[in-house]
Image (tube, rainbow, N blue to C red; front, side):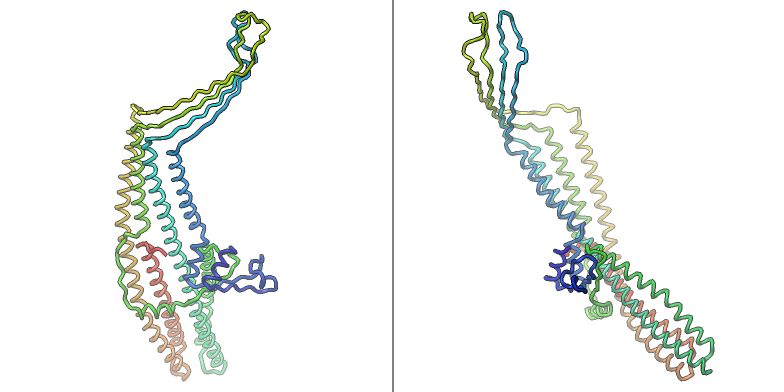
Length: 454
């Protein structure tokens, strides 16, 4: 966590605000208040660096490098050394003191095997390459999904915060209306109905404000989870939907292509099909011969034979030098599979069926992905049109509210007109913010579907 914060503060310019004596010197003191000010790009950078799902995917890539090295090792020479010591507790005796068994025996074997032709290893190496591709694509898909989740969480916070701001403004206007209406009612210039109506509308707004405040906290916790930031941190996000909306309207219509070749799910299925085909090739190698060269060095030590009475020496005397034998051999081994009970054939059939299943899934997913792209583009264009319409509505609603206030202040209009105008203005602002959020959310979904990597 320290590494992430220091890196982000240095590279991305994140402000780490720490208050209190010890906390001001050490932002990592337990319990010290900590705040991160984030732009969307900084939030994405932290998430890609700290989120556990990304770290797991990267570890899988590293693991596959060792899987391939293990396969390569199967084609390298192998050397084994084993030794044995044997002590005869009771030797066999053929009579007359004659025994051909030694009392002590030492055996050391050294074996060298050099694979010369191992088709399974060659095909497995190609299988390992596909496994690496699958791990890399899985990591890429995890990044794309995480960026989508971070973006939508970030936009959700913006929506909730700016909705709260609109509601707070509406609350201030209503409170002013209630105070003015009560003053007029106390002086006999307004009816009790007008006062009650204004007060009820103000009261009805409070639950919505409380709910919006709660949604902000939930959205921030979700974003912190995606970023891998401790929940006791506070985050302050930069930007606002109005500025983003104005930038979108200024940029105008942009072309959204329908090329889905970068879709991570499709690419993962393509790799899965290739992986199964490689597995089929590996399976077929079980019918092929293997050739290996071998070398063996054997060192055997034993007691000399005790011929007893045959030599006329019943005491077992004579030369007792240890007898050593060390033969060396080399050669070739050829293994040719002839029959394995049709197990290889049945295994191949299983893999072929798996290939057919994956191909069908891939075709169906391609059609589904095309529909997702179409829906995302349609949502983008719909939200863009809604933004333009709602912006004009806000202007008209503001003008209507100003007119209703002027009429009511001059004793011409009614409180019902003011309340209706206030509600229309608030709803128009909320609708505009929602349209901007819908646009950004749909755009994030579009980028995920077509597979834009961050």
